[in-house]
Length: 331
Image (cartoon, rainbow, N blue to C red; front, side, top):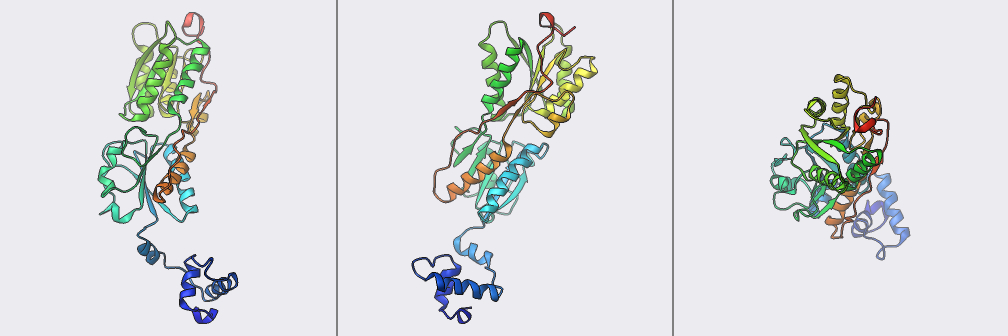
């Protein structure tokens, strides 16, 4: 290639390595690039990465692939990664939010960093090996283990749900809480309780359920059939539980929202497939993934990552309405 361009091998190395500015003229650089094109030159990425000590590969760890939320997170992370010549490997942890096993013989030798969504930083100890850079998404920012944290405003979203129901006149609600011990669900429960506690005469009960439609249905049936005055609204930790709640209402002969209002969280495609469509909180999942990848790139380059929370949006649809007369089922 040096002979074809009429330059030295050192000049070819400078130009193809992107280090020619100020050392080689623009005309010479163009000649080298033209020669490379004519000869069909392609850089040896493996050799370059070995020389730089980088694999240009990132692991995205998620607790499960049961909802499209994590697919959207991956889409955002992969888009930003591709723009910077990185690849993203998606790894659903076999233990859910529990300790994740190393998917490779040595993650340290295979990866440049890790992004983990909706998990505890301590759960990544088995994957990080000798201390790979770690960015946490939708996770406890006070943990102190991660190099950076990217969170949507989970608490703000649940506060908006609570205020919406209070404004409609609801005073008795049941929280269909995800039976998962993770930061994001603890934040939802705390935000809901705080808003209702500030209003006299309100009552919140809790029914826990695994993140499955049938489990949500069973929890809602327990809430709506329990002795005493039933709740006028069911506040669900995600849209999957809300779908189960809607099924429970139908099986009990109740109408949504006439007899009971239902809210979700995440704004999955499921939310607009239900009838009536679901009032829920829209999380910017793709942007969470994109910001997470950008944060990891910043860590790798020794820059400070942006730690601002991402805005969420309450989407009001047909599953919520004022309670019936005297706070009971609508006539």
